[in-house]
Image 1 (tube, one colour):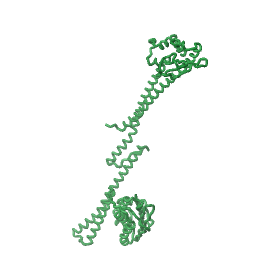
Image 2: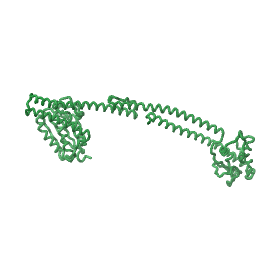
Image 3: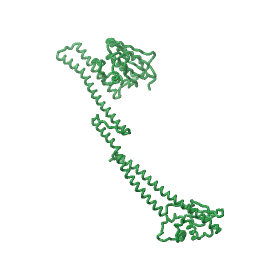
Length: 481
């Protein structure tokens, strides 16, 4: 079974802290030992200096090193003179001599072989002026510290000191052991404190995660009004804000879905109710199947068919399968054809339509059917929502690889705050522009899908003529990728 995230964080923090504590323990312990070794080396260097001075004086008297050849006692005597006075005892010289000869020492003073090998007396070497051994251990290792022995301003020999492997002083060893024990206790205490802090920190970090997980579960269960309290600006705070945004979006989409279903039901019910009423009236003999009655039924059937077709077009756009047979075409040809088609209908409602095209050819890479559908929807929108006696101006301009088509009509207008919503599905302003003769509010939504598929943009603005100005921008052939 996998660990909970709280325990994963806890063990991760504890592992990181434990690693740091272990490294600190090892480094500090090593530093203490190295410090004492350096201290011991300094003491031995001072003793070596004293020994060099003493040997220089003896050489001046003796005239050579012959007095030391095979004379372990004399060599031990010289070594004892280099000790501090408080460490000199009556039998010290004899004990050093026995050590140099390889003999035993009293039982109470027994030391290990390692400790014996680190004694100063067993590591100091006397060499003559030709670097030949005179006294001391006969080892092949090269001494790491050398001192010149001077007699009558001439170098008559050298002192070497073999490297020391470890501490041998009893007090030093006791101090190092005490420091190691103290470091161990401190490390254990630090690990315990770290474990407590890590656990509290892990619980603190996981608490908002649990809250957000509960909120997501509630959202998945349908509680779309769920919100998470944002108490920080870090990544967890960003995640909480993201969940709140998701909840708001889901709640809004659910409201739009319900409104969509209600609006679609209303739009479908109206023509169906009329068709049913007309058909039942004919069946009951209240109305005769005259051409006028059949025409009324045809009008309602056409209206219902148009609504279903618009819904189908939107569903294709939503699923990403809105088919477009793009080809290179002349914009003026398609636009002029659509305007010519609508001129009689505009005239029947006492509306004027003006088309302003720039000189030269305007080439687009688009689907001519979809482009024609775009223009007819925009023209139909102005036809439905412009008061009689008004006019529609269609202006085409070309700039920076794009062509802009502006459709602007006369009164009535739309409140500026409502303009962006005209591109939403089934949205109609509660004003004179949504009279019963209008459509279902899907035409401009379809226009937006067509423009998006063509890589362009569509915006709705107030018209200088008092109505609405719809601007469509499409890429020219040279500007498409």
